[in-house]
Amino acid sequence: MMTAEQLIASHKANVETLFGLTTKAFEGVEKLVELNLTAAKAALSESAHNTQASLSVKDAQELMSLQASLFQPLAEKTAAYSRHLYDISTGTSSEFAKAFEAQAAGAQKQFANMMDATMANAPAGSESAVAVMKNAVSAASTAFESVQKAVKQATEMAESNFNAMTSQATAAVVKAPAKKR
Image 1 (tube, one colour):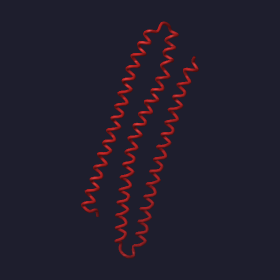
Image 2 (spheres, one colour; image 1 turned 90 degrees about the vertical axis):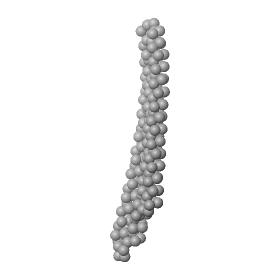
Image 3 (cartoon, one colour; image 1 turned 45 degrees about the vertical axis):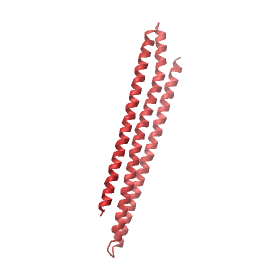
Image 4 (cartoon, rainbow, N blue to C red; image 1 turned 45 degrees about the horizontal axis):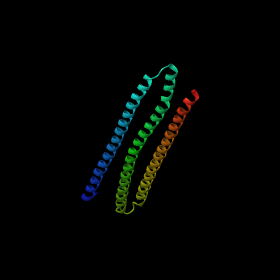
Protein backbone atom coordinates (compact mmCIF):
# COMPACT_ATOMS: atom_id res chain seq x y z
CA MET A 1 0.00 0.00 0.00
CA MET A 2 1.10 3.52 -0.70
CA THR A 3 1.34 5.92 2.18
CA ALA A 4 -0.56 9.20 2.13
CA GLU A 5 2.68 11.07 1.45
CA GLN A 6 3.53 8.80 -1.47
CA LEU A 7 0.03 9.19 -2.89
CA ILE A 8 0.20 12.99 -2.61
CA ALA A 9 3.67 13.04 -4.17
CA SER A 10 2.43 10.86 -7.01
CA HIS A 11 -0.55 13.13 -7.66
CA LYS A 12 1.67 16.20 -7.47
CA ALA A 13 4.07 14.70 -10.02
CA ASN A 14 1.15 13.81 -12.31
CA VAL A 15 -0.24 17.36 -12.11
CA GLU A 16 3.20 18.82 -12.83
CA THR A 17 3.57 16.51 -15.82
CA LEU A 18 0.11 17.46 -17.07
CA PHE A 19 0.88 21.18 -16.86
CA GLY A 20 4.29 20.64 -18.44
CA LEU A 21 2.76 18.76 -21.37
CA THR A 22 0.01 21.36 -21.73
CA THR A 23 2.66 24.06 -21.90
CA LYS A 24 4.57 22.10 -24.56
CA ALA A 25 1.37 21.59 -26.55
CA PHE A 26 0.64 25.32 -26.46
CA GLU A 27 4.21 26.07 -27.50
CA GLY A 28 3.75 23.75 -30.48
CA VAL A 29 0.48 25.43 -31.44
CA GLU A 30 2.11 28.83 -31.02
CA LYS A 31 4.96 27.83 -33.36
CA LEU A 32 2.46 26.46 -35.86
CA VAL A 33 0.42 29.68 -35.82
CA GLU A 34 3.60 31.73 -36.22
CA LEU A 35 4.70 29.56 -39.15
CA ASN A 36 1.31 29.88 -40.83
CA LEU A 37 1.17 33.65 -40.31
CA THR A 38 4.66 34.04 -41.75
CA ALA A 39 3.75 31.83 -44.71
CA ALA A 40 0.51 33.74 -45.29
CA LYS A 41 2.29 37.11 -45.20
CA ALA A 42 4.95 35.87 -47.61
CA ALA A 43 2.31 34.39 -49.93
CA LEU A 44 0.35 37.63 -49.95
CA SER A 45 3.45 39.69 -50.67
CA GLU A 46 4.60 37.31 -53.41
CA SER A 47 1.12 37.23 -54.90
CA ALA A 48 1.09 41.02 -55.15
CA HIS A 49 4.56 41.02 -56.71
CA ASN A 50 3.67 38.25 -59.17
CA THR A 51 0.43 39.99 -60.14
CA GLN A 52 2.36 43.19 -60.86
CA ALA A 53 4.90 41.21 -62.88
CA SER A 54 2.11 39.47 -64.83
CA LEU A 55 0.46 42.79 -65.63
CA SER A 56 3.72 44.12 -67.07
CA VAL A 57 4.18 41.17 -69.48
CA LYS A 58 4.27 42.24 -73.13
CA ASP A 59 4.01 38.92 -75.00
CA ALA A 60 3.27 35.20 -74.58
CA GLN A 61 6.94 34.19 -74.49
CA GLU A 62 7.62 36.59 -71.63
CA LEU A 63 4.53 35.22 -69.82
CA MET A 64 5.77 31.63 -70.21
CA SER A 65 9.20 32.66 -68.95
CA LEU A 66 7.65 34.40 -65.96
CA GLN A 67 5.53 31.36 -65.12
CA ALA A 68 8.53 29.04 -65.34
CA SER A 69 10.53 31.29 -63.04
CA LEU A 70 7.78 31.15 -60.41
CA PHE A 71 7.60 27.36 -60.07
CA GLN A 72 11.05 26.67 -58.63
CA PRO A 73 10.83 29.15 -55.72
CA LEU A 74 7.29 27.94 -54.99
CA ALA A 75 8.45 24.33 -54.74
CA GLU A 76 11.41 25.29 -52.56
CA LYS A 77 9.18 27.32 -50.25
CA THR A 78 6.66 24.51 -50.05
CA ALA A 79 9.44 22.09 -49.12
CA ALA A 80 10.76 24.55 -46.51
CA TYR A 81 7.26 25.01 -45.08
CA SER A 82 6.79 21.24 -44.90
CA ARG A 83 10.15 20.88 -43.18
CA HIS A 84 9.27 23.54 -40.58
CA LEU A 85 5.91 21.90 -40.01
CA TYR A 86 7.57 18.52 -39.58
CA ASP A 87 10.15 19.99 -37.17
CA ILE A 88 7.41 21.54 -35.04
CA SER A 89 5.39 18.34 -34.90
CA THR A 90 8.36 16.08 -34.17
CA GLY A 91 9.68 18.49 -31.53
CA THR A 92 6.34 18.57 -29.76
CA SER A 93 5.79 14.83 -30.05
CA SER A 94 9.30 14.09 -28.77
CA GLU A 95 8.51 16.13 -25.64
CA PHE A 96 5.40 14.03 -25.13
CA ALA A 97 7.39 10.83 -25.74
CA LYS A 98 10.01 11.87 -23.16
CA ALA A 99 7.29 12.57 -20.62
CA PHE A 100 5.62 9.24 -21.37
CA GLU A 101 8.92 7.39 -21.00
CA ALA A 102 9.60 9.12 -17.68
CA GLN A 103 6.10 8.32 -16.41
CA ALA A 104 6.37 4.73 -17.59
CA ALA A 105 9.79 4.32 -15.95
CA GLY A 106 8.42 5.75 -12.70
CA ALA A 107 5.40 3.47 -12.80
CA GLN A 108 7.61 0.50 -13.60
CA LYS A 109 9.88 1.34 -10.67
CA GLN A 110 6.91 1.72 -8.30
CA PHE A 111 5.51 -1.59 -9.48
CA ALA A 112 8.88 -3.29 -9.02
CA ASN A 113 9.18 -1.85 -5.50
CA MET A 114 5.67 -3.00 -4.66
CA MET A 115 6.42 -6.48 -6.03
CA ASP A 116 9.66 -6.66 -4.04
CA ALA A 117 7.84 -5.66 -0.86
CA THR A 118 5.09 -8.18 -1.53
CA MET A 119 7.57 -10.94 -2.30
CA ALA A 120 9.64 -10.15 0.78
CA ASN A 121 6.54 -10.71 2.89
CA ALA A 122 5.48 -13.86 1.03
CA PRO A 123 4.79 -16.87 3.25
CA ALA A 124 7.33 -19.65 3.55
CA GLY A 125 7.09 -22.27 0.82
CA SER A 126 6.03 -19.81 -1.89
CA GLU A 127 9.50 -19.44 -3.39
CA SER A 128 8.47 -20.98 -6.72
CA ALA A 129 5.50 -18.60 -7.03
CA VAL A 130 7.77 -15.67 -6.17
CA ALA A 131 10.28 -16.81 -8.83
CA VAL A 132 7.49 -17.07 -11.44
CA MET A 133 6.28 -13.59 -10.52
CA LYS A 134 9.80 -12.13 -10.75
CA ASN A 135 10.27 -13.72 -14.18
CA ALA A 136 6.93 -12.32 -15.37
CA VAL A 137 7.86 -8.82 -14.20
CA SER A 138 11.27 -9.11 -15.83
CA ALA A 139 9.72 -10.33 -19.11
CA ALA A 140 7.21 -7.47 -19.09
CA SER A 141 10.00 -4.94 -18.51
CA THR A 142 12.04 -6.40 -21.35
CA ALA A 143 9.03 -6.35 -23.68
CA PHE A 144 8.30 -2.72 -22.81
CA GLU A 145 11.92 -1.72 -23.49
CA SER A 146 11.79 -3.57 -26.83
CA VAL A 147 8.64 -1.70 -27.83
CA GLN A 148 10.26 1.63 -26.88
CA LYS A 149 13.32 0.81 -29.01
CA ALA A 150 11.14 -0.23 -31.95
CA VAL A 151 9.14 3.00 -31.75
CA LYS A 152 12.35 5.06 -31.68
CA GLN A 153 13.73 3.17 -34.68
CA ALA A 154 10.49 3.62 -36.61
CA THR A 155 10.51 7.34 -35.83
CA GLU A 156 14.11 7.70 -36.95
CA MET A 157 13.36 5.79 -40.16
CA ALA A 158 10.30 7.95 -40.88
CA GLU A 159 12.36 11.10 -40.36
CA SER A 160 15.09 9.79 -42.63
CA ASN A 161 12.54 8.92 -45.32
CA PHE A 162 10.92 12.35 -45.00
CA ASN A 163 14.29 14.08 -45.39
CA ALA A 164 15.17 11.97 -48.42
CA MET A 165 11.78 12.59 -50.02
CA THR A 166 12.03 16.34 -49.43
CA SER A 167 15.54 16.46 -50.89
CA GLN A 168 14.52 14.46 -53.96
CA ALA A 169 11.41 16.55 -54.58
CA THR A 170 13.34 19.81 -54.28
CA ALA A 171 16.11 18.52 -56.54
CA ALA A 172 13.56 17.39 -59.14
CA VAL A 173 11.93 20.82 -59.19
CA VAL A 174 15.29 22.58 -59.45
CA LYS A 175 16.25 20.41 -62.45
CA ALA A 176 12.85 20.63 -64.18
CA PRO A 177 12.98 24.32 -65.26
CA ALA A 178 16.58 23.88 -66.43
CA LYS A 179 15.49 21.11 -68.81
CA LYS A 180 12.70 23.21 -70.36
CA ARG A 181 15.05 26.07 -71.25
